Image 1 (cartoon, chains in turn cyan, blue):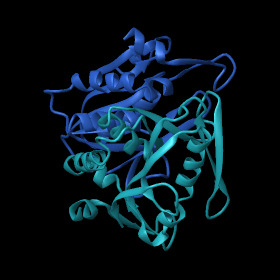
Image 2: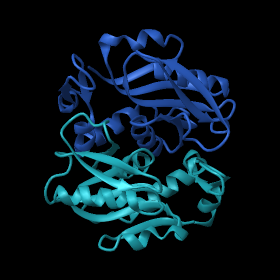
Image 3: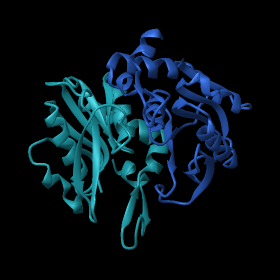
Image 4: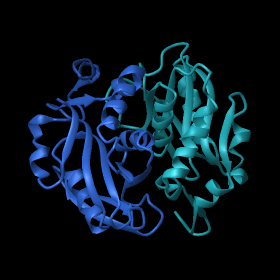
Length: 171
Length: 171
């Protein structure tokens, strides 16, 4: 785990002054590290019934699609507003300044399906909270929310009280 | 292949009147179809040396990351302008109205690395052409551009003359 953590690159002052951005692209591009991440995250769910993995745009697509492949499921996309072409359900959530809206196709998760939600980084937790609300509106059962890493200082985990949360790394 | 093709959903008049949008989310969400797509695309490259798979934002991340996992490589992200935090190289390409810009980290592909470029749909080919130029500027060797499907009418394949192009499905 320590090696995985070390491959993540710190970018000072991105996207703005005073923020140290955790750049996971260096980890994703490293074959050994990337394989290890998907294997470790995937192994956690082997033997559990997962019907579908939900990936959150855009970097959650990476975790979501590779995990879905490993777990022999399909992958469902949660996208920014306006990108999904069929009948959607929306959830809006607060950002530091303003709000953002996510969408999912209404027929993408069926009642009773067991869903794994996947994203790269758990920060404040606002995004994944919106996704949890979506899956509940579609009457899916959330098995867990799985992240490559969580930013401990931001305490996103505290916000998600009634769904299990897993992160492979803690930054 | 016919079954795979049939699972892709036609959405009339999206994103605008007169266009029939090919919605692949129905295929991605279907476990059997999704597994089959990644297996078929991946098997094509087994036994070839691929050092890294490049996925193009956003739906190319899905093909790219699952293929990278299958092929035991890492995945490199080509993103819309402003999203990548480190030193990048840019390419701008023409859209129907206006232009768009993509970026890649300068250190993401090393000289001589063998690169597979992955995306979901080959339409006019403008996007992938820009990505090809990027990989060349980084002195990577492009093994192939792999798509889930190509839209035959738009003749994107004709535009990409000096790099092999593969698409699993033709729509």
